Structure formats: structure tokens, C-alpha cells
Length: 281
Image (cartoon, rainbow, N blue to C red; front, side, top):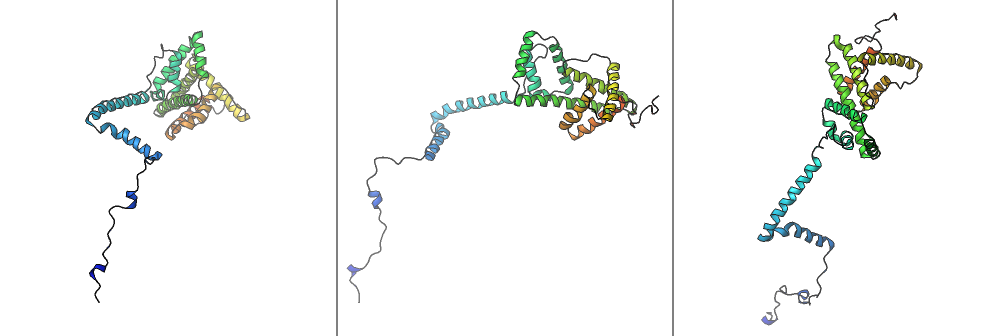
């Protein structure tokens, strides 16, 4: 039986307007979260200046000036520290450059030694006001400054030992003993410069004392007594401080120089290590 047409079910459609849309809107806007506000601020800062033509005209020179300022700041921070005049500039500035900057280590070792010698001469003629200034300077060195000071000193000694060791390495067998003697004399004078008392003795006087100390060192070693003489201090420093900071190649060269210097001061043959006068006469 056919149902009346009026009673047939019609397909359902989605309403164009739902109850939520017809509900009255709240008078107060929903409060944004902190993250949303942060995103809005970032968008305004990054993209805001470019939204209009007028804003872009203003923003371009401002951005350019900012880039220039950043470049100048980076240059001032990364540029090498200007080297002071070691003869005329204030002592605290000279000491600050020598002891507390890594740029001093970049100079050739010969130049560093020459500057140290110039500085020592100035210290010998230091006035009372300079002495007070240097005392204040020394008292203010701590933390990172003290670490840099130790690094500069050790680096200079490593480079000095290696400079002499390299020269010694290329000396002929006939010149080996003379080269070892010259190296010892130069090291003694350099060490005395660091002590603030430049050694003005002749080459022969320095070598004579070195041989006496070497002989006493042998006797103390046999008796197991320590030695604090200059020669012992020189070799101890080379073994402990220089040896701890040097590269493997530097250690190899320095150890050969130390061996030949020791043999020379003990009156032993540089090549074989045997005593030159076995009978003692």
C-alpha cells in the first residue's frame, strides 16, 4: 500500500545557524595566555616595522645603524690588544699587557724576551710612586688574571727552551758542546732577568759556577739530598713546568738539550756521556 505523499520522511539537512552562534556574545574578550601575548609582541617587533612604506623607510636606517654598532662592538672586543710602549707607557699598562693578555704570547719569542729585558731595566730605575703603583697592580691580580699570568710565563719559558733546543738540534757534532754551553749561559741570564736581577757575569764565570753546581748535584744525588741552586732550579723547571706544557715534539728537542747541557757541565763527552777524564787526573 502506498503511503500518502504528505507523510513521506524528508532527508535531514545541517542547520546553517546553531544555538552557539545565536547565543549572546560576552561583553568581555577572552583573556590571552602569556604565550599568546609573547608571540604577538614578537610579531610586532619583527614584522611591525615593515608593514607600511613609511615604516620601512624609517626602519632601514635604524637597522643599518644597529648593524654598524654591533660590528664596532665586535671589533673592539676581538681585536688584538694594542702593544704599549715598554719604555714610556705607565708600568701598570705595560705589566697588564705582558702578564695578563694572551696577545703577548703571539709575539715572536725573541721579541718577548727583548721586551722583558726592557721592562727589567725600567724596574731597576723605578721611582717610589711606580713601586706603589706596581704593588697595587700585583695585589689586584686574582682568578682569571692569575691564570693568564702563569700561562704567559710558562708559554714564554717553553718557547725559549724550544728555541734554544731547535738551534742545538741543527748544530754539528763538533759544535755540540759549545752549543750546549751557550744555551746554558743564555738560560741563566734569562732566568735572572725574570728574578729582577740581570746576571752581568762573563760567559766563563757562569759556566764555572754551573760546573760546580753540577758536581754538587751529583754528590747530593748520591746522598739523596735536594738542591735549590740555580742550575738545579733551571732543570727542575724544565722537567716539571715546561715539560708539562710542551708539545711532544718540543719535549723531545728539549730533553736532548737538557741531556747535552748536563753532560757538558759534568765534564762528560756530549756524544757518549762518558767522563772525559776517567782516571780523575
